[in-house]
Image (cartoon, rainbow, N blue to C red; front, side, top):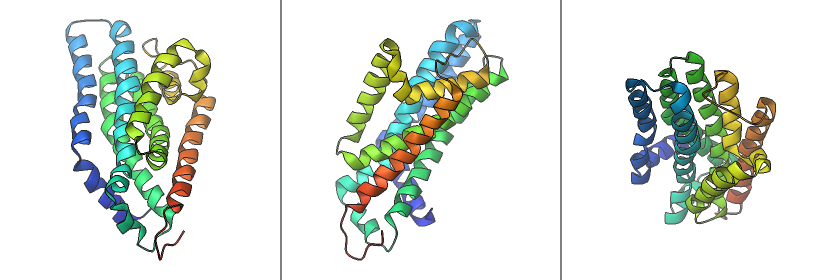
Length: 237
């Protein structure tokens, strides 16, 4: 990983308004969990919709989408990517540096918040499960969305279609789609660690981890290959 590229990416991310606007989302999950607990609602009643639905199903993929498409997409759109490509750096090093930033920022902004919200249920394993699921999801989603940012000029729109249509609507209607659904992998990992009725997963953990790795590695290779198609004099591939 190149530290200079990673630092530039971090500064660029935190300077973008759309990312900053999403930062309250993880805090909203904690706030709703606190409110439900204050109202003496049973965790079995609110845990699924708040922790699973809003937390893992909406907050995690949206944060990963904005971050994953932001580490490269904006630079491609405004043309500043050429300044990076002009440096004598392997394209693989550029992609991996930006992907690591996307994974870390997503995990740091989402996993602790979901973990805290899970602890509010009174069961520590639920918090651990949510944090672990968010970490797995940060890796898989980042691989997918970084690749999308290299393949299309509308990565956010395409990513929203994947999250809302494929994972949201079709995932609840057609069980077969869950085998290609990152949200299903995340739920499986969280449910296994939580070992509670609050969370539910329909896939096995080994399959979920393998497929998460496929999304991460596959997305990385696609992004590297695509970046190599950008022709700049003096490059090292």
